[in-house]
Length: 364
Image 1 (spheres, rainbow, N blue to C red):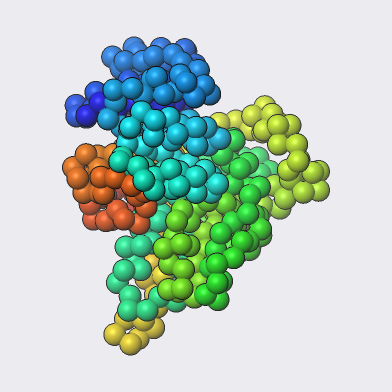
Image 2 (cartoon, one colour):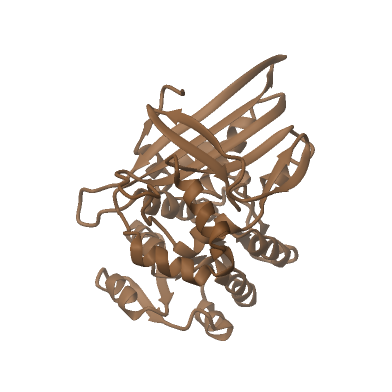
């Protein structure tokens, strides 16, 4: 299967390595960063340097490929999908941006190829899990989805280190959040809805952020009472981010905020990804609740150490592409994450990365 990968950044490097070593994908990686491409070329991966912000160069790059995997920053998702449509390539991406996803859905309406955005962790795997749990209920009441990519050893006041894109982080903190409340689809404010909980003996907070629900609001509209997604952090993080974004008004000067975070907040490869989903409803006429709770850890051994966010995000999109190749997903039009069977995902050679976890037995 001839595949074009757009983006050789933090996540793109891992995607490239997984697809290349699988032996089933003829891969070419495209990026504007020659140094990042050189690191992949040293591993025997074919690379081409292009201007990824140019629609013409993107379309030309995709010519002759069967599928494109987009690991570029979220603001380039729409242009990459448009290039895929022009080149008649199947399209997969990681975007959490709600506006981009809606535009990609529109592009897919009459397309002869498949368009599957949001193939990462959240949106992505979290939606697959939630839909799987929900499918066992006669009647759904409440679905709560919580995800956090956290430093294993927080040391600063924010109790956070950069584990992925700063652009993506600020985007989800600043845009309205879809949810279902009392049976109605609503738009909630980011950073609101603060809650505290303990998991596996550790205290956490969670609050609204944008994009994590994927297309579930549309899929479950009119079918349940409450649905929401919140990002998990260590206690105190949300208050400081609200101070920066609202009181210092950096929400309207995101360039400055991103510069400050990149300069002052170290990146870390020692992280942990927390996935926590609760679903309540009726089974056999009885009100019950089911919980899915896992922690996925970084891989520090081996020649190429991987952070937990690299593992989970790259595994998500590689598994989606692989399941598509195996014809376990629709072959044209818009594909939702909830159309992926959790059993198929976890049995997949890439999806099995989610099995290197510690399942949490006790919920506090």
